[in-house]
Length: 331
View 1: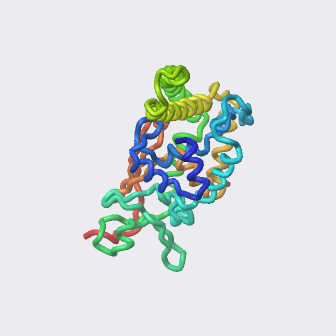
View 2 (view 1 turned 90 degrees about the vertical axis):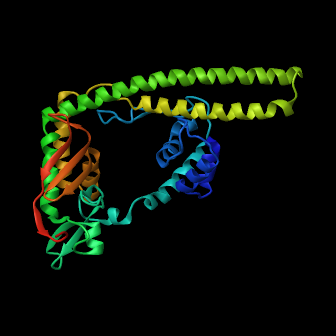
View 3 (view 1 turned 30 degrees about the vertical axis):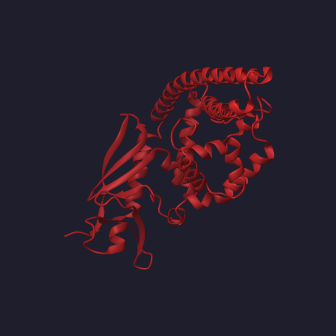
């Protein structure tokens, strides 16, 4: 199965096409569930299948990751892996909504209408002198189609940025956030370790069953025609287990080894302030999406949902007062 994924992507097939085919065939993913883009993308970009161990990609000290070639058996040769990376990069823009990529509005893709659920779209007016966020339904179908309000883009974006600064860009908050993330990673690592033990036991069991079947072939006690289907099923199961094992090992290798020290956290505060104030629009968008999952606006209120609980009060959601410009939609 692993070889098939790399072969199909290098032949030019898209992730969606591959996913549909696998699910149609009833082939389950590494965790026994249907395939999805994230699962396949992780597999296709995981260097572990080339026999390479990469450790420390999330270093708190900005150290280069440690790479060990030939750390284990090579499953995918390096040329095939690199060709797959080229194909994935060439198709990357296909999976991003062009309006979201091109938009110069900071909250594009995050802001949603609380009335109808559609995205809030950035819109210019008066020859570009004024800039608003407006409900997609209202923009497309006109007055009366939704009760949403037009919102000043600058005030709205500043409101979200101020909240991020309040919850993140202080020394105490960032230190607490780093501690929280480490605790969550510890909990996740413990779960990964348990699953890794279970998978390793399963792999050992499959290997023993295959050895018995091979012995039966060598001694002639059973014929190949009788054993071939069983061997095929066991080999497929064995490959799935190895994929899961490598995925878990990769997740464990990303574990931060230690909590960032005081000086590092202080440097983070400075760097993050600079990022929000001086970086490119794309970098600022990416930064905000690291902490904000969604901002859903209903009337003059916005419910901001965070990706993780925000210090100091461990907020998962927060209601903000949004200054509207003009009531264009409802009655």
